[in-house]
Length: 82
Image 1 (cartoon, rainbow, N blue to C red):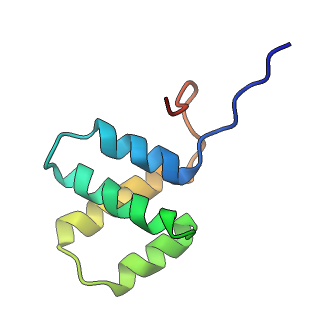
Image 2: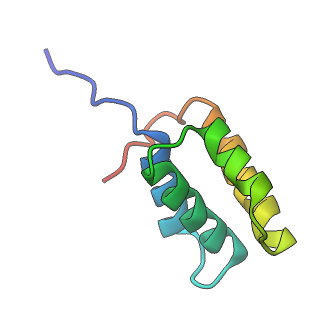
């Protein structure tokens, strides 16, 4: 019997979103910001609080909130990091 690999953490999922985004895109920058926030041990709610207190370009803030929204749900099937 084989074990199912553990679900990826929100930080791992954000890292994958960053990797898949186009180089230099707003989404890639926003996902990188989310990776940094979650890498500090913050939850997605904690990352939202930090984003609310920091001065960021509006398009980066909005994109980062979209990435966090995606991470709040369950990971898609087969979305394990490689």
